[in-house]
Length: 196
Length: 196
DNA sequence: ATTATCTATAGATCTATAGATAATGC
DNA sequence: ATTATCTATAGATCTATAGATAATGC
Image 1 (cartoon, rainbow over the protein chains, first blue to last red):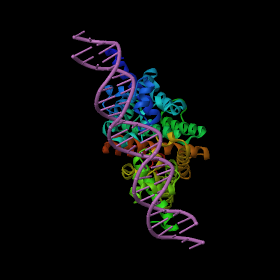
Image 2 (cartoon, chains in turn orange, purple, blue, green):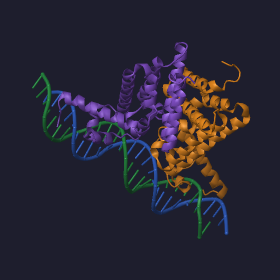
Image 3 (cartoon, rainbow over the protein chains, first blue to last red):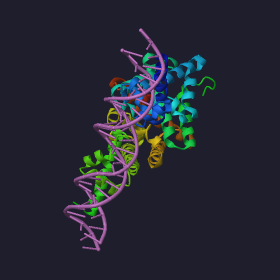
Image 4 (cartoon, rainbow over the protein chains, first blue to last red):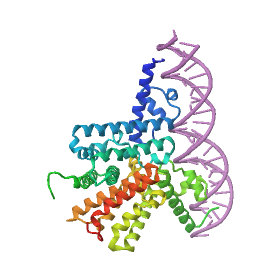
């Protein structure tokens, strides 16, 4: 049943990709090695040829999940550079994002549990959280670099908090209202059309 | 070793109070019945005379944790009704709150994991999350009731997201910068002194 | 007599490892 | 010969229950 070197690398990638989904959907504690391997189509014993431990996997999966959501953000910026912030905020605060944590922002999926884990997982998560802020900086307004950084920090906080609150309230109407209110508040200073 | 009726009620309270702390410090999965009972000074077998199951306990602990943080907010409002919002935001976005999740906002402690649990835990958490928004409404500005509600939603999102981000970055300087930036952004429209 | 707590353990779950198997790659 | 995967299981942990113990409360 042994596979070729290329296939082995592909298997590792499949495990990682699936883990990056599952960890965002169900959380770190709920992610089981046996479950994961079964979803990938292998037995759980084979896992330890690809990863040293579950901790090792989760750190790699968190890093990969961040890479995925970062790539999505880059695509959105490239699609409409003039309105980059509006694009980013609109997609982040969408119903689709609220409903599908597995393919969404890793910070929003694991914000309260990942930092508690410390170690490699906590470090990978900390890097990703700072990355979320950093990626906003080029697209926000501000008198100087420090002001733009602070604006990015506040916007990241509002986006993250709004998705988390919307997922928490468990009432579609209230969830929508939270996302809409947060979006309006963030984009208010950036309104181009109407000069209120 | 049996205790009197009053003592029994007090024991239940002690278990609940400790659970409300522990669940915010370590999360739902990490909270163990045996650990909890040991901290309260009892053996784990006695637990099931007070609670039907761990799920039952966690739902009650979440509700109690919300009651505690709600009480804290009420105290802050009563202490200085004219500047209620400033008081609430300042204390929520403080270093002390970032460093001590066990005695802080339950939404900020369990935002990503509690909604996944569904059932009684998810329901208790959803109630608490809406409560956080509702308690802000009387203290915010807005043209009408709907606008004030939206303002409360946006502020709650920013507060929650800022604490979560600050706890995630694991760098005291950046954490402080996030809290300060979020506080400034929220209170900007409420500045009384300087008329910028 | 009732019941709060304790002791002991059943039963389930999960990470990790050991040894067997079978295909790759030299 | 090496190694990716599988089978089987060790070892740890955690929830929950059963039965014993001892103090309360009628």
